[in-house]
Image 1 (cartoon, rainbow, N blue to C red):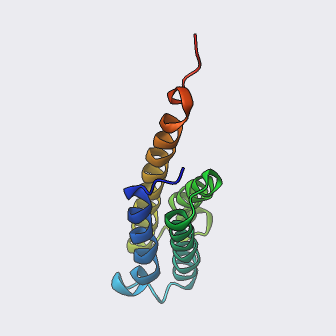
Image 2: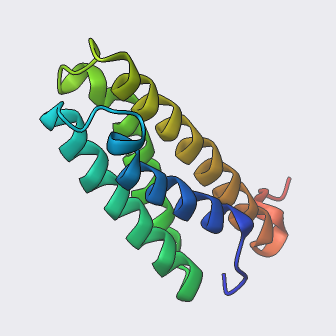
Length: 119
């Protein structure tokens, strides 16, 4: 797992976006949504940078959890009434989930035997 994947760069961009999006989309006054975007955005960015420098499979699972959290957080944290914040979180989370599942599938395919059980 020493190979860098483009998905790691893409999730880094999503993490950076989540950090700046409260101001870019105008929901910085929605404190719960802003805090969520900052905390999870920083976490995604850090995980992405770790993945780029010293990739490990467990980091992909953390990234997947962060993406799922972003998708459900507008309802769990009750900021779904703020459309910009809710859509931003849900779409960014969906992107992270898709990118991470794609990276995990590449990791599995790179394992001996292509990740398939012999028949």
